[in-house]
Length: 178
Image 1 (cartoon, rainbow, N blue to C red):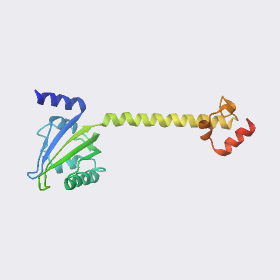
Image 2 (image 1 turned 90 degrees about the vertical axis):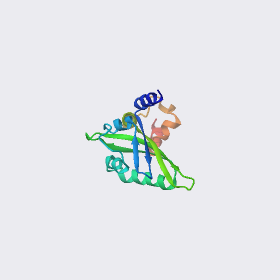
Image 3 (image 1 turned 45 degrees about the vertical axis):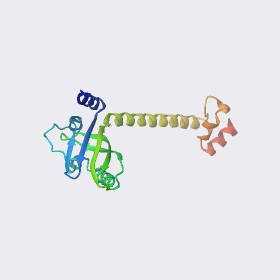
Image 4 (image 1 turned 180 degrees about the vertical axis):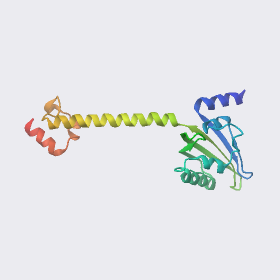
C-alpha cells in the first residue's frame, strides 16, 4: 500500500526518485523517473553515464561538476537543468540529492529526486514577459504624456515616486511650465 501511495504522489507531483549504489555502480530509478525522461522501464539500464548523456549539452558540464562536487564533499545538491527526451522534447528538471557515507567518510550511496518543472517555468516566463509588457506600456504612456506637454492627470500633484522616475531635465521643465 505504501508503494502505491508513493507512486501516486510521485506521478501527481511530476517527481521521480533514484538511488546510486556507488561501490557497485548500480543505479535504480522509480517508474515516475522513467516517465519524466520519456522512457519505459527496460529501455535503459540506468547509469550515471546514461543520465549525463540525456542531459542537454548546454548543461552537461555544469551538472557533472555539481554531482562530482557533492560526491567529493559529501554535501547535498540542488540545481535545475534541461534534459532531452528520446523524441527530442526538452524538459526542465529540478534535481536534488544527497550522499550517504561510511564512518570513514567514503561515499556509499547517492539518493535524490528529479522533478519536472517545465510547466512552472513556462508560467514564470509568461509572468515575467507580462511584467515587461506592462513596464513597456507604462514607459510608452509616460513618454507620450511628456512629449505632449503634460506629465499626468494630477498636474503638479504627481507623487514623488512618479516624479523620481522622470529624468531630472524633464522634471525641471515640468515644474517650470506646469
